[in-house]
Image 1 (cartoon, rainbow, N blue to C red):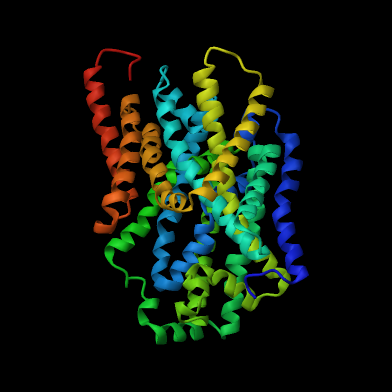
Image 2: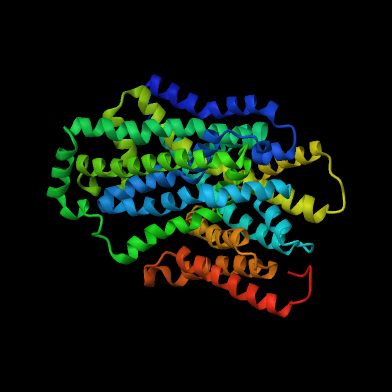
Length: 486
């Protein structure tokens, strides 16, 4: 059966794939001596590592399972779901990454909220507290959903009950994160990128060869439904919603922190090229898997539980030996981990750096060893909470994760862009924009997404942008001649 690793070789490879992160965590531990090492790798990360890590951390099971399943259902039109974020992130490396890396180093900032507070001289911690609440809400749901998806992979692959699978899923992430922090996360992202190379590049190529070439696949899909080959068969609203996903990239703390970690901001140009190529290759690979799957299994009713997202596993078992199948199933878990661990790191930095150190213990000097210990402790506690949420509130978690990307993107994307490029931006404008972006995301998702067909991130992003601009201009006029209050 495709959904069981009965073969001992496949099982062994799968287990090695799961345990490899812990080994990397142990190796990385010697490089993690203080808080900045734990959260941003001491600003000494290699340009290739940053490129692959930035891409991998932003592509979870949504790419491996979601996009391939979307392509199975919608056809070539699913490519629009990758166009937006690939385009935005190509420019983001250079136009946001470089300035953010230099600014955060000069301000000695190691989190996104660190940067905002220093940039706007927020002595009352208004930005930090507001941002921490927003991050905690969306990131916790995001991590829980990733744990949930990871548990489903383990449960299916090893035939274990769901509760035990969640525990294993969470434990694997927590162990290597506690050991190595950001360094372990970044290098694990590189390893996962290589595993995804097999799953999203080699698998489609093998599939095409087995079908007898691209022409044969096109012929089968055309006979099934010509619209499967038409990228414009989707409505304008759906295409806009897919492309709009890219608006969320600048506001993802777990992605932008990668730019802060690089050894030299000048190297981000190189990282942009590598990262963009990698994004394109992985995205096309995911779409190709869906199209090949539709040609292989034309009727969705023939899929297990009528679930198009299972097509990745079906193709893997169809075209690969047991050893590679074990690697590819591990690849699903790898994609999930590369997002979950990055988000856990953001959750830890939000509590330790942004709340404990900068708000609760603002006037005290905390030794690096104490901060590092607390950072690791918060990772463990946050992970445990996410595991509980993943098990007890599955529906809530998956409902939240649908707009978690949008919530973070709308809250922090416009704020970051304007803070870097518009000198008139004010503290009150930033706080108002964060709140506006978050609330519009929630409101739109609850009451308007289904009726309008517009992805909630789009109105939330531009609503946040507008509020920041309007309030900043108004605030500047009111405070003309006064200093230190913006």
